[in-house]
Image 1 (cartoon, rainbow, N blue to C red):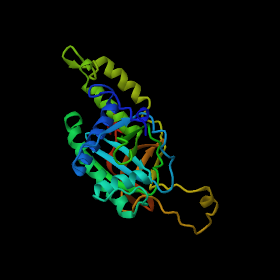
Image 2: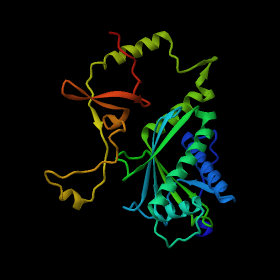
Image 3: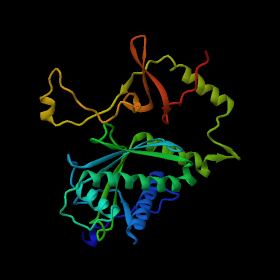
Image 4: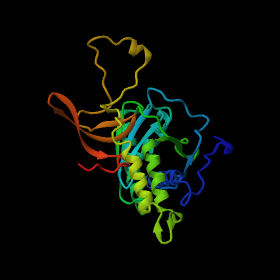
Length: 294
């Protein structure tokens, strides 16, 4: 890769756009962990645009899902092409570089473990800004069904790991959480020594009255047990008796969707012969309306 194609980093965004700050933390954490493993500095930068030579999604790509809880809630997803998997895994496993080798299952597992170590550094770095943040990383059979609200790319320097690239997608819930937390922490939010989020009694009463008009509106909820990407030829081959394996294990919580947006996760229960959901985790935006008095 020529110097003109070198990664263009995000601006120094420690006090700027919160998504950029989040990107920078991941880039710095990736650089730190890889540097410790390799015993030498390995620079990494976040990019707004994908590298020109990055291949489109393929069936041999590695997908990993990240679920955030605690100070930040939402989902992320990683995509790594086989060359990036190989370069990162060989560094992590202290193997001699061999770009002609095809990645093995051990290489893929090594990259997942690497991502978990990076996530641990991200969690520590994010604590000062967002408090305790837990990140759970799992392998996915394919890309998640939800479209990312923000996508960016982390790339190592071309001289190291052949310029390994990690494509990262942020869910809409996570992007909203990042921006909401930044808005609440902004000094401009304070007026007269108090928080502007606290409404005067009259205005608060007017808003409550407006909300009460909407309390009896019915909303469509659905449960998502998992997803799977199929080739068109595989879809055409479906017939009665066909089994489609999803990307979620039976012991994992299922998603509760409101108009396609993830609002909660929980455990499946049976109530009088009907399916139900015992909620175990509620996501940002799901508790915007106050509870009704019984």
